[in-house]
Image 1 (cartoon, rainbow, N blue to C red):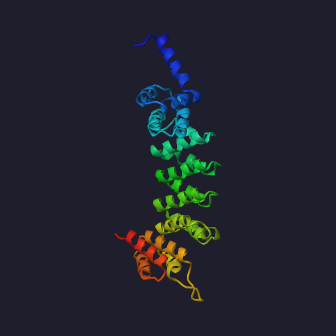
Image 2 (spheres, one colour):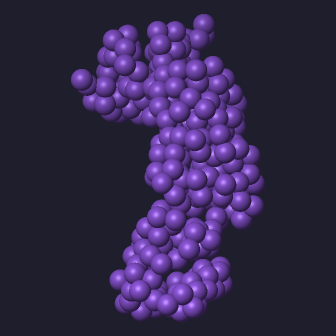
Image 3 (cartoon, helix red, strand yellow):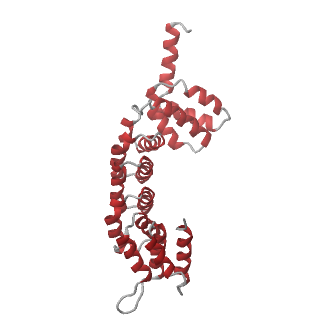
Length: 276
C-alpha cells in the first residue's frame, strides 16, 4: 500500500538495521527491556542479508527469549531448503559457523553433513563440539563416518561427545576404532567419565567378538591370577550393559556377586539398564 519511494526508503532502513553492529545494538537494547514481542515483529521484516548477523547474535545473547526470537527469524531467512544457510557453514567467523551448524541440525538438513564434517578440523573447540552434536542428529553415513576421526580430538569434551554420538547411532563400523582406543594407554589414564563413554560406545556396537573382549576385562584373570583394576572392570560391565546380546547379560550375571563393591555396583547398574 506504500508509494514506491516510501517503500524503497523502508527497505533501505531495514537494510541498515541488518548490519552486524546494528543487530548487536538492537539485541543489547532488548536484553535490557521487556519489549521482546516487538523484537519478533521487527525481525520478521529483516532481509535475507541479515542472516549471518542474526546467527552471530544468537550465539552471543544469554537471554533465552531473545535467542528464541533471533533463531525464529534466522530460520525464516535460511530458506525453505536451507539454501541460504548452507554457505554459512564454512564461514570463517566461528560464531556464525557454530550457529549455522546448530540450525542445520535443527532443520535436519542432510545435505549439510559434508560441510559440517569439515568443521571437525577447525581450531575452535565449541565449533567442533557443535559439529559432533549436529552429525549425531543428522544420522547419515557421512556423518557417522566423520565422527570416527574425532575420537582422538585434543579436547576431552569433544572426544566424549563423539563416543556418545557413535553409541547413539550404533554405528558398527566404529568397532575397530573404539577397540583401538580401549587398548590405548591414553584411555587407561583418562578421566573415568571418558573411559565410561568409550566402553559404553563399544558395547553399543558390539557383536559376539566384542562382548567376549569386554567379558575378559570384567571376569578374566591373567596367568598370574590377577584381574584388571576395579575401574576398568566396572567400565567393561557398563559396556556390556549396552550390548543387545544374551551373552552380554550372561557375562554380567557371572559377576553379579563380585567381591569388589565398585564392580558389583557397576554390574547391578548394567543389568538394570539391559532389562528388556
